Length: 360
Image 1 (cartoon, helix red, strand yellow):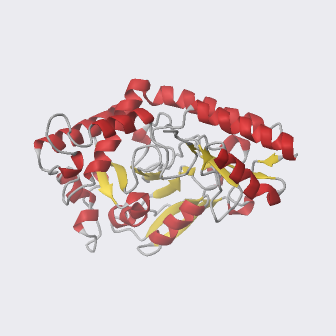
Image 2 (image 1 turned 180 degrees about the vertical axis):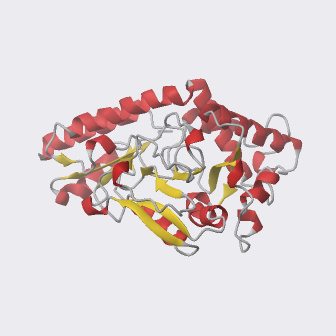
Image 3 (image 1 turned 135 degrees about the horizontal axis):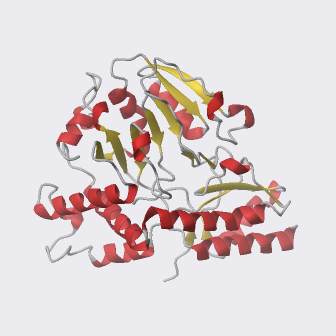
């Protein structure tokens, strides 16, 4: 069997050792005689899987004791509504930073529950940069400040953590969580969809400070109430058990690799391979401000867009999959998450060089 190099933005490539282990354990987890997919979430086997996954995530990110870790259904997009439901705490406004597609989606959902103050925006330059904090205008009455710390579609990443003072900072870190060290204590809440760097689609991980729990709006469904879920170890309802298991395997893989600091070194090297090439060619264009380029999602375009389909077709023939850009922006996009091996990135750059030689 030949596996392709999958550059998809999500669901994304998973570490091959994780997939092989999951395959080995699919029918019989550790002599239990059943698959994790068949286990009761109340049984001792799954309780162990869940506890180990949380402990490993806490270790990887250095999560302080006064933060809860929740494994919830609904993906990252579900949190667009669940965050204001839980964090408004009787206040009427929340501040949001608008840096592109996923920020816009989060803002639209928040408007269902409160007034949204746009603290900063990069719309003036087609969402090609991360607004400097000295340009932000946060409403002092805001319940929280929300930003998308890596925009998957636009390829813009914040390489710094905003300072919002006493107002809790909320980050949608879906597309770069676990790609680098993160000072969790700087945030009130971090959430992330699983399908980029954590595991299969359908689950979100929420890391939330204790003092922000217990203030949900009265209309909040109990399965979306952080206090209810924290009190039940994310098992108020049946959790996404297999997704938790797969996330746990990814966490173990990361620990064996050397943790998020080592992962960051690898990710910097991988991204640099692509950006170094883009910076010395005029055949391809890179739209993002250099200081804000994402290490995870690299959008680029061909100067002659009439060659797009040929570029994609030849890429697929060489085992380079899912390079088509998001439908809202077009062009190309290479998502090089943690599980993308450096060999895949080298193969991509070699192909881009070859295509330029034959079509430039």
